[in-house]
View 1 (tube, rainbow, N blue to C red):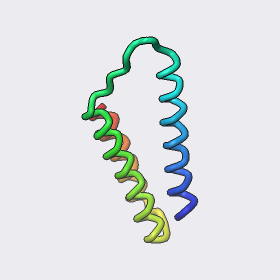
View 2 (tube, rainbow, N blue to C red):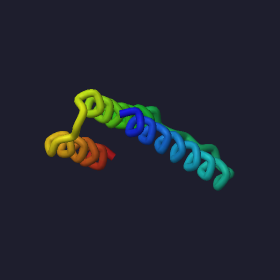
View 3 (tube, helix red, strand yellow):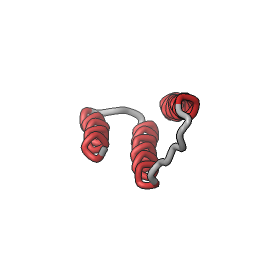
Length: 80
């Protein structure tokens, strides 16, 4: 469980920092980010982490936990 949640958190933080770095360095304009966008991303990120932690505590993945993960991703795509 610690490997999965650590990989998820580490990858997410790496991508967030690298993307933010390149965004800031590539523009001379002021970057304005809507609060609802940040809240949306944080909610979906926490939902993914919680699902991985629950599966880790439970001890294994089943087909329906995989379907839940796909549903969360599809919902994120639809919301975005």
